Length: 556
Image (cartoon, rainbow, N blue to C red):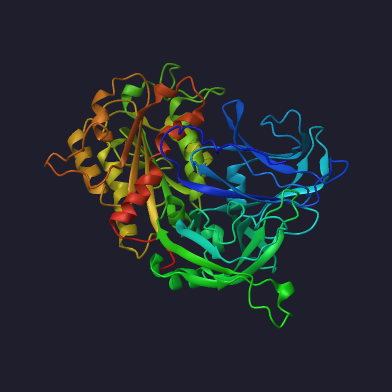
């Protein structure tokens, strides 16, 4: 029995637009059989967690009478690099037309995170029953390979961001039904490295028609051919039957490159004889109809992850305010007070933001700087000093290294002033300028600047930001404590274009300012979501304005 399923439901964005979309394709093999007189009629339901609650993201179509379903429905999931996204895949045997699942047989599930799928590339886990035991031999695998005794999720991070708009029609297909014309639908398959064919797309069924025109559809190049335009593709046309025993009408082979080139941007229809291999031995056999490719238009767009996967390093630097207005670090009321059980706002901000960004830097060595303090050995005021007091090597290993250097530095310095941020901005800008001289998209710099008050050198900071807007660089400013940060909002540019004292506007928006107190009673991860959500757009905007493609970009 056919099952009606709804549209995929994206959850509302927390901070900004998604970095990318991740396409999840689900297939299963050797599922448990829950039907008595026939095989199961499975679907897969994807749930996503929002807070402490799960909501249904979407469902595949139902594939009738099989323990080895190959679902054509794809889950295009918004990927937010700044947060953890928990997913649950559940497979059911559906025996009725209701949308509820309570009366359907549970075949197994998997809980994981989207980050696990994206970062592993190949992710394989067994399906689990509600008892916690394995659901037979079923497995879920993020892979291009299909093998026996498995249930797979074939997941592809849509890093290519080239898409193709496609349309097919057919003419004079073979009649497969006795009392009516065929009910044709078309599938596109791609060949994996192991020689197996994997379903890419399945059109809708056009009832009672030997010369159907199917609806337009759009596919990513990644999902069609994994970026290999010469990969073998198979066009397979079937006659749909309600009992699931669909009849092969015929098939043809091609490549995406051939489809694009021969279609000439939609100006030329491409003919593919529809051949049924079982009939080719007959001398009188010519074909089982003609497939016409009426449209195959390639479009491209690059995303943040295109640049990251192309080798662009996200270089993270921390700048910490050590001015006297923070209070004596030995005083529990100080913003720099170190408690054995409770981290202060500086520590929370470093851990929250740095904990996300560090995954995009291979060596995880981060320059960690301070400003506004008198430092050893001569205790002169410095607005650009290394937390480890080694100006030749100010790097700390990971977020833990930054926090350790911060704790070690506090007893050795004297908090002073004023609150000058421009030296640290210019410090990072020098490295960003060096990266800008290198070919390709080699690196991008993110400065996390933590301060407890309005900047004393506002004009110099505005000038530094305007210059930095021409470089591969973003600035995150977190206001710590209870000060009035109204004057800091102008640096963000949300209320208008930031200009230097000379009147020069920023080339692009690179500053994100938030007061920490907005997140005082929230999970620290909420801060990272808020301040990092704009970084992917800033990265793409910089390289786009400079006409710099990702290092692994494939020319058309």
